[in-house]
Image (cartoon, rainbow, N blue to C red; front, side, top):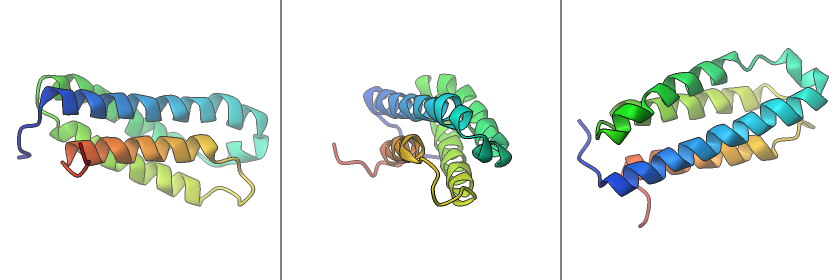
Length: 115
């Protein structure tokens, strides 16, 4: 079991997850729609990981952040696998932003972030 974290740390992690989720959404709606060649690379694993992680936010707000931390780790790993399958000329700004936000949330929940 993870040690108790102050509610403000959990909320910061949730906000970082939310920011990463929004960055992913911008990628899906703006980059993918403008790049048909990228549509050949499935986003299903990332979308599923994000959906599962989002469900755990309510538990985290109640103090049980372990499912959120696990979900964030799965989401970041899925995003990294997705990025690795993209061509070298793909626009990655939003994906890098999402990855950074998810990593920040993980660091907060794992107690690794400097406060």
